[in-house]
Each structure stands twice: as C-alpha cells, then as structure tokens.
Image 1 (cartoon, rainbow, N blue to C red):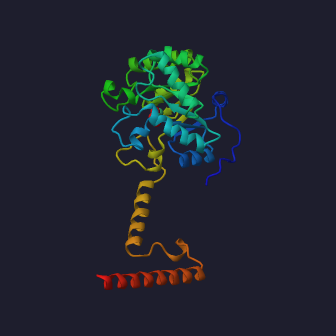
Image 2: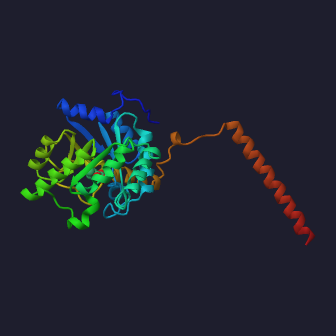
Length: 305
Ligand code: KIV
C-alpha cells in the first residue's frame, strides 16, 4: 500500500502559490485522476494536482469533455484526495455545472470541496464568469480561472485551436484575465496561446498564471498526466513533452502475461498457496470414503429396481 507521507512535508495552499510568484519560483502542476497517480505526484513534490475534466477523454474515452458530470468529477476527486496529502488539489467544474446560474455554480463548487476533498475549484471562461467567481469566492472557496483554449467551448471555438493569435484576441484575453483576477481568482490557467501572450498576461497579473501550451513566460506549468506518461495514444498536442511510453509498457506486460498463462508458466509455485501435507492426506482419505459410501448406496438401489 502507498503511504501518504512524503519528503516534502507541509501542505501547499493558495498562499504558497502566491508566495512562489512573489519569489519568482515556478509552480509545477499536473492533472491526476486516481489514487496511485495522486500518490506518485504528491511524493514527487508536485505543487498542485488538477482533477481536470480532461478525464472524460483520457480516462473515460469520450471525444471531448462535454459529457463529464459532477458525479464523474466527485468520483475521481475523492480518489485523488485519498492519494495526495501535500499538493494543492484543484477540482474542475464540469460542463453545465456552473454556466446556468450563479447559485448552481456555488453549490457545485461547494460539493467539490465538501464531498470531493478538493482545496479549490477551476472553471472555464473570461468576463462572462466574473459573477460566478465572485459568488464562489464569497462562499470561501478558492477559484482558478481558465482562459485561452477552453475545451468546454470546443464547438463555439470551432475546434481545438490555439487562441489569442491576433492583437485584438490577445488584448481580449488580457482583459479577461484582469477581470478574473479582480473577481477573486487565486490563479488562472492559460491554455494554448502564443508564448508572447502567456508572458504578457503573466507579467500584468498579481496572481500566478499556469500555462498549458502557453510558453515559458507563465508563472507555472501544467500538463495532462496521460500525455506526459504516454498513456493516451489518440493524439498528443505539440506543446506536450512526453516523458515515458507507459502505453507500450502496459501492452508489453499484458502480452507477456497472456503468453505465460497460455504456456502454463503462470501461476508458478511461488504464486500459489499450498495445504499442509497432513491436511491434504486427510482430505483425500475423506473423499475416498465418501465415494465408496456413494458407490455402495448406488449398488443397493440398483438391486432394488
Ligand atoms: O481538464 C483539464 O485537464 C484542463 C487542463 C488541461 C487545463 O482543464
């Protein structure tokens, strides 16, 4: 079993993140969706784990994040909360859990903390989310914003496209970031924008920015764990750095297992439990006695017919 202790002892909070920005220390964040990944991330010293609704694609196999529900999120948030005790835990508010009304946004944000064990929530969008952010923050819940490529708006954006490429679009993103900061966000994810835009926004905000495909100028970096591990083979965005090829390793391990089973190499004696030899001899004797009783009863009933 994994122990929850690790060598980086004190709990990371939103204040730790703010102090990292002030001191020019880069924040390292990654997504995580389950207990073992959360434990491994936590013990590696990650500053934050995002239980992203990207789980809909990389764990549940959907084509996009839209089908993900609050129930899905809570299920995975709880697993991550059981595995990580140190990192700041951020739970993603899924599609339609915060867009319809501010009251619903507050209730669902509260659930991610109360039932999911998260420390903070994330929602997508710019100025149009200011009211929801204010209300959630007023309820005592830290909120992370998310601008640029916002996957829940994939149909409105016309696909998985980089954002903020024109001066007008980049300026609008900066305005959105400033509005979200003013509304009370403790941090903002900036996704898939030119490096210049990531740097410009990060330089103008007091709160830390976390870039995913937004270049080196952000205050922190975030990637999807399945991309980093090479566990998601449908497509890998160009801004991802793949550190392992776990999918191939899994396939290799599974085919070795199948070969062993079919060749009777598994289970070997060391993978099985054995009976005490005397108990086994007793068992064999008892079975032989039962069989001979059964045979004589059968002979008797045959004679009667
Ligand atoms: O759901 C997610 O993992 C995300 C990040 C990629 C920003 O929103």
